[in-house]
Image (cartoon, rainbow, N blue to C red; front, side, top):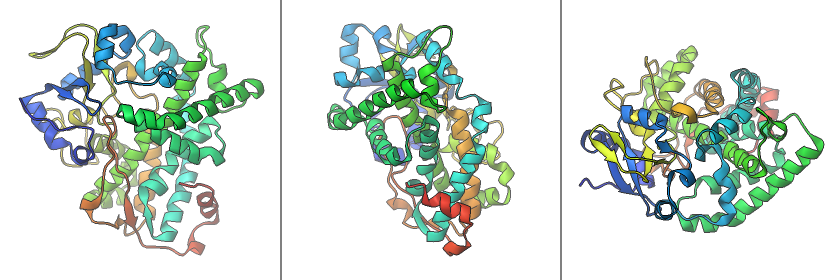
Length: 423
């Protein structure tokens, strides 16, 4: 049997693609034990991943898919405090998922997202201007993170003074890997949930025009969000609403720095940004594994059969580098066409915030390559480290340098914007 390292470890995330290539060739459907010490199956070929993401026999809700005995054996331990979080869309199957998605989709329509372009551009301009004035920054901490964080917090109507608290709470939420992590995170998660419940109550009393107010009053076919569903939805939106974009912008910038010809091309041809963002999504795969699914009956992938009652992860990062689908998959090709990557998933659980993440990246990358001349790494490439995570793939930091500009040469509006957005 092939020896498979812990795929949630930082060392694996630094370059997972050689292992994924071996798995596609030798063991495309393989049983592993993850960092939570629970068994799971990995599906790695593009065709199988695309199929798994749409197969109704691979359920998202373990309380429907598994027996009580199977849940005890398959599911990581979680304290009762976190029970409301199981009400989020990611862990629901139709018809519950359909109802929840319909309620939130009305505030994430393409037209509403496109209306944010001007505000996203203003935020980006300020962040990049401040970086240019300093000449040396951690691009992840000072551009890639505060941009989507500011956007999602503004959409939700969260007070700017509270943004650092939300970032700390969100970091705890996305870092949950083991029972020890959960115990250590309980105080932060309790404060997060208490804060949100108080905020919901204020919105019910006073209303508002932000996303939380819209979800409080949202109704679709006579259905509303319960208190737990609303809590799970907002926590999901805060976490998922910025984490993927943070990883995309930071890892995508690193990919461009690793390939100076592509960086220079994007600088010369800013209209290339739309296919470039799609290629960077494929190439870096900010979401490495789709969230878990559970077999409600035996499911076959070719000659491999996963028995009923098993936990399954579809490996998006592997599918996005499948040589049977993508020509020269380990090469960054900004104008790759076609590009049927699975960076945002597939099927009914296709990422609800995909259009927002795309828009933020389409604004951020041209600004970074255009307005940070002489952009280069400020540390040795080998010293960069990656987050330990079973699902996500992202850097812990990205120190860069550029040709500094005197602060007086930065437009006044950009200086003001930069001063008001803290990483």
